[in-house]
Amino acid sequence: MTTNPLRLFGRHLATLRKQRGWSQETLALESGLARSYLSGIERGVRNVALANICALADTLSLPPQEMLAFSGEAAANGVAQARHGVAPRYSPAVEATLRHMAELSEAEQDVVAAVARALARKPGR
Image (cartoon, rainbow, N blue to C red):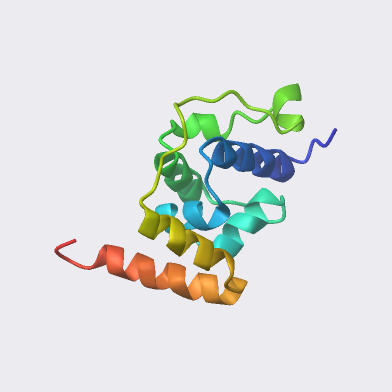
């Protein structure tokens, strides 16, 4: 059992993400964070900032303190209780986009995520 808080947090985040049926790409697009950054968090090699913990909690519709509820045997085994209902269903166009995103390299995914974030910030949206 690991006691490294970065690894425990990363496992907990991955569990919460997977409970919703989301890929890292989906969480990245929804949260505005880079997929490569999320990957590093989930692997326990990135020290996530408080602002990003709050952004992830908001994206996952959880209170921020739930993001830090990773201590104990359940988190160490990568198991957490589901806090919400079933994973969301996406339109066929979104599903196709997510499938195509999975085929892109990490650098290409980061470019697409940056474009999506820029479009989301445009006035009038």
